[in-house]
Length: 264
Image (cartoon, rainbow, N blue to C red; front, side, top):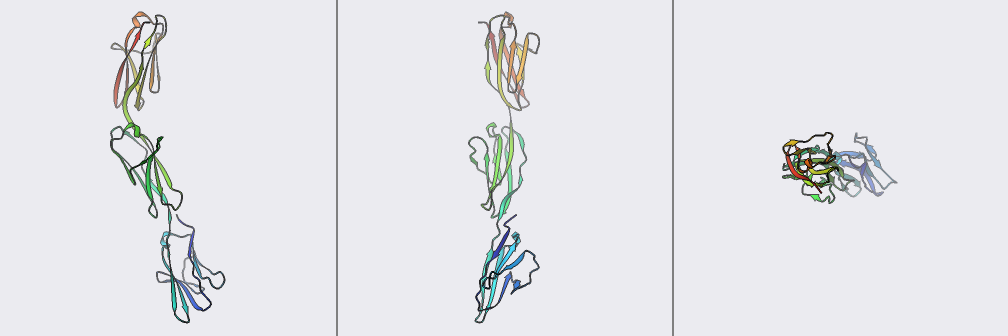
């Protein structure tokens, strides 16, 4: 959780008769005699003039005031050291990945601990990846499709490397037909009509000629490639010329567009 060891230095001169270390009025060492039962605590005495206290594997509970008490022939002296224990930032709870419909209100949470208290920042990892206005909770009102993606939560307090976690947000929205491609095809050639739509989840496609739904047969081949559908009419005849309808749908909505197969 924290720094490996900490300590407090105390230097004495040869006129000193008695020394002791105390914490919150509890005696830790009196001279060379250890009163504390804590195995992590020991003395560092380099030569006769240093009388320092060392604490291994420091914990947050070790924080506080430590007193080096010195008895000389003239008068007692005390020297105080305040031990501040720092703990690296650590994210202990973050939102699960979510799927929402466009227009929903979304709150992402990211909870972290550390000493000092960590600063929490959010980014959407799109090309700009600009910081977002949120701390422990990031509120997105009326989420739009361009706000879908991977959100990064970072907790930092300058004690160690920041802790980082991620939340994936999928935004569902109804189909929009972005592009259609009609075809000018002579009799006897292959006619190709194309329809591109964007949607999450991916759209399902249907093709119609007048009111009649088209399906694959010897004369017609329908291909669906993700968000694109292609209608291929082999060996075009005069009867094939006219208006065709592409329909894109998912559970949030439906949209259609008219395309034309016409003679050269």
